[in-house]
Length: 351
Image (cartoon, rainbow, N blue to C red; front, side):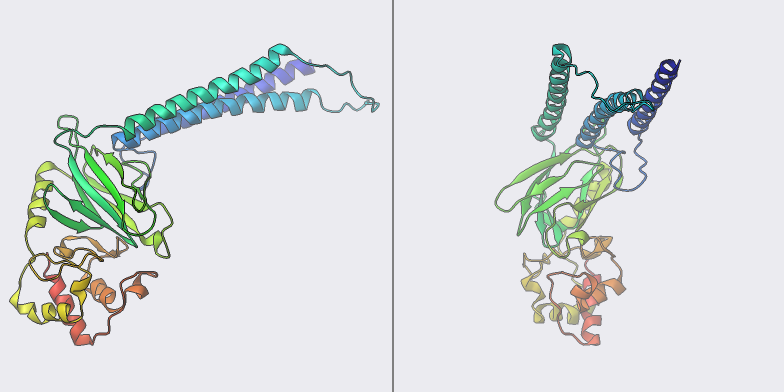
């Protein structure tokens, strides 16, 4: 009678574990593009991210099944062979060897590992070796301490921190292929809903690609420790309709606005040697150390995504960058309040 109850208990426990595992798998599989958070890995919205999600769910199902079997056997052994009250302390009869059991617990794990290896290798090959179609958007992403540079060679301009790409809907697939470079130390490009982590290593070009299926803003992060301000090296990917993307490209191709009313600020930009680090197309500023400022005010954020791009934040950032972002390599430049007002007013015209 006791053995019957034990078997019923184990059967119910195993059924509950399997049901919980299936429910979790169903929740993951039913994840929709509406994320619980902007970086929700369970709401993939691009082919590479969906491939990674599927293999992750598959591995979870396999390992979950293994857990259920092992836990059930362990619970059975613990309960069935627990020490009886009338135990006399003598060693029980010893049973040696079972070729069938030894073969099973050797072959089955090997087969499971082979299946997981082949499935993972297939996903890696499908993502990393995918060939770019002729009409794919080509972008070069360069990691700097501690900001992102995006070069659009097809359009001959660069921008910073906010990556704009067109939507890639099933009717008109336009994937974006990213060449990944590092200007200094190791970085890692990671936008969870669009693709997996891909490292940027000095002198070792790398690549990744995305094909977002809906418009919107997708957030990410440098996923490789790269220095003091690593945690504040954020990623923002703007997925736009084809028309909106082309409008954005047209705006970015234009030279900087030349507003005569901000001539004092423009002269100050040169006098304080800001041009040595920053580029403003259409002017003598051609620095490559810091972000391109040609269309600074067209961006929603500054300081690699940590601050809204408002006149107040822009002024504070110019006044003392390390105070706003610890570890920032942009030096503090001594300026009077009047000079800060003038140079901020000039930068506000760069739309």
